[in-house]
Length: 437
Image 1 (tube, rainbow, N blue to C red):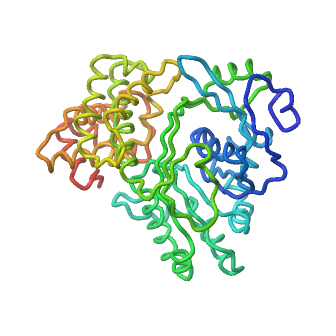
Image 2: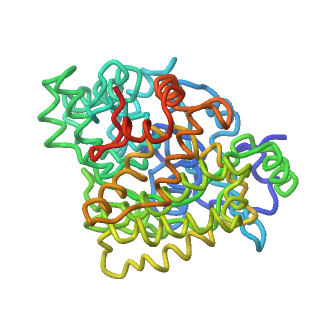
Image 3: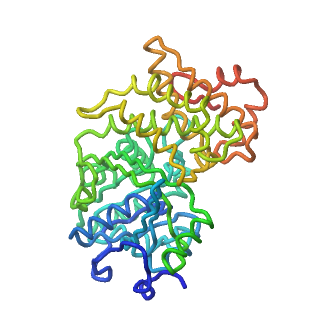
């Protein structure tokens, strides 16, 4: 029997929300309602409503695949978050999701949700490639037509024409300066496709920067079976994560927002130091462990960080290569942050697959490694750990770990097979990031 509104009273062994879901309006439309969003932003929103906030239910959007809709809609949007550590597992049933819409067949319903007066926020976890950027960082208009941009443009026109206030567009993805990037890319789309909306967007909408930190492995069949045994109900949308969670948000919204701080979020004037530390230290070390760990025959992050040689590389990347390039905010302790990251990576209860982290390297490596590499070059320093990671990535591109999951897989794979590591590094890596012709 699956979890749903009807079967919820039968659930056991889990904390749950106490608010009346049916009485709450949808206030957020979220693009990319995968496991990461469900373990993070939706989890924060659920706890904010539990603390007394109201009318912040989430309408999720899957732009292409109906898989998440098929998981969540039969469950009335309910799902379980399993927080795992060496001490055990805690379960919480989250009630913040109202529905999941699919872009391929429900574009009109998505636009209607975005245009509704009660919707104040459109948020995003679409991964780096979901922003449809060209190699030079500008918007690829052809790709953008299949993304969220035209849906937002249609909704903005309806809001403007009806005299409804603008939206907050909240990127929750691992992009450096994600708020400004989203504002720039959305502006480029409007300038090209709907120039009459460009000034309205600039005047009425806001794109705050965010930094999100929570490790969320892909949920396995074994995970779902374990949760079902504890809950007494099956849950096709369950997610597994660590106990640690951090969300730093620039306090710059177009209108109302949930009181996410009631659930532990930090509202600040400048996200940049937190974002840079996460991208260069956590994400940089994750990618290093992924490519070098796969080459060493490991499957999971906790296995890779238990390898003395790989742990030493990860420590060097975080402490000696990345941390010196981060101008920490007051009270931000990068030494303690590195200590905490190693402990989190070593969590034996979290089976975070290296191959999952290795996906989409062309979209991740510029901000995770190359900015650190360039900052050290300007200081006259070398980065042996990042260089080892690049070598691991080059081997990955040649298919050493199986099929390469990357939007530029064919082009990069051809380049990698045609050149040795030194030649490939000279061809690809430059001060301005990846050079992909």
